[in-house]
Amino acid sequence: MTTMTDSSVREFKMPDVGEGLTEAEILKWYVQPGDTVTDGQVVCEVETAKAAVELPIPYDGVVRELHFPEGTTVDVGTSIIAVAVGDGAAAAAEPVQEAVADTPAAEEEAKPAARQPVLVGYGVSTSSTRRRPRKGAQAPAAAQDASAAIQAEMNGHGPVAPAAPAAPAGGDRPLAKPPVRKLAKDLGVDLATVVPSGPDGVITREDVHAAVAATAPAAAPEAAPATAAPAPSPAAAPASSDTARETRVPVKGVRKATAAAMVGSAFTAPHVTEFVTVDVTRTMKLVEELKQDKEYTGLRVNPLLLIAKALLVAIKRNPDINASWDEAAQEIVVKHYVNLGIAAATPRGLIVPNIKDAHAQTLPQLAGSLGELVSTAREGRTSPSAMQGGTVTITNVGVFGVDTGTPILNPGESAILAVGAIKLQPWVHKGKVKPRQVTTLALSFDHRLVDGELGSKVLADVAAVLEQPKRLISWA
Image: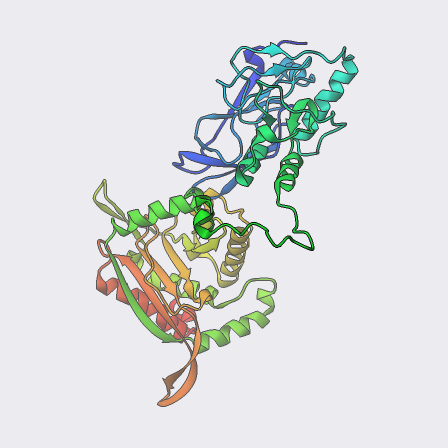
């Protein structure tokens, strides 16, 4: 078998996929040891503090080892996968088998005649090893078949021609992949009691489930004896049963970053929030008209589109609201562009992607940008760059039926507009009480650089545009 040198192995390190990120969690591996990879091929998906990102490998070769299992948070700059390249790729492609223990300091592991691929996330045991007694001479072809069976099992294809079930040797720890070990732990199954069906004594998921089924209490007979033992009292129930009343969710990824950012914002920038209730009946009529306009065919047209445009008009009339506070330089940085953030609730938590240079977009262009932003966020494909550099944000709490709120500033921004639910309410219109479409807007701003007058002007301008949308033409 060809020996690989260190120079033939390339280590792919966790990159910084977003400005200033320090760590990322490995969500899913798309390759396993022994797989051939090509330059640009996606090998894993990771979740940063900003979004989920797929990582491509930058060279051709054969995967030699995955350094971390799925679910592990890894620091930026740490190697996560080793790939054999050049002559090393040919050597890595040879069928190999290595038995792996739970930890490097585990007890001696038996080593079969051929080498087995390293189980993900555990590496090769550094302790001394002993050879497992051979059951008989194994032809080279048979050895390759065994290696293929192990590789198929690791790739999730199931065992190929499984060997007869056999319990682990007396001094050996059970062999199982990390996902199988986690499954056994979650189900409360001791792997030492599980009969393996995989090649060379590897325990599969099916083996764990079979062990659970075997220990499940049998159904009561049709005629139960009258002297059946009474059910245990609640006091006798195991303490672990109480855990079913609570669920603990690890704080990581987007949710962890959001929590830290919100705490930092709340206790750094002095927030002031102002409110205004406005009649948006004419805006709602305009939305319906635009939906029938051929220029907007295929575009997302809704009240948020006109609210976003109203805010952009208000910023144009009051440019000092579009600024940030530079604590280090003790300066107010006024932005001559608007990267409009739209808060979006996703399964991974709240994210705020932004539309770059929204101030320069026409209404149809803004509709297209909003549609793309929303669909990308829903699909979990928002890139870290799309969430950087925002200047002002809109959060639409009205979609949840909420009247309004007191939004917290997105870090580095000076203002955020919350939009409440639009409801039919009695309203004095032209001297008479009539049913009108009404909503409440809330504007939070950083009082270090935005005083009450400026904040009030911006909020009043937004309300005025929504009440009389024709101002979009005269004020834009």
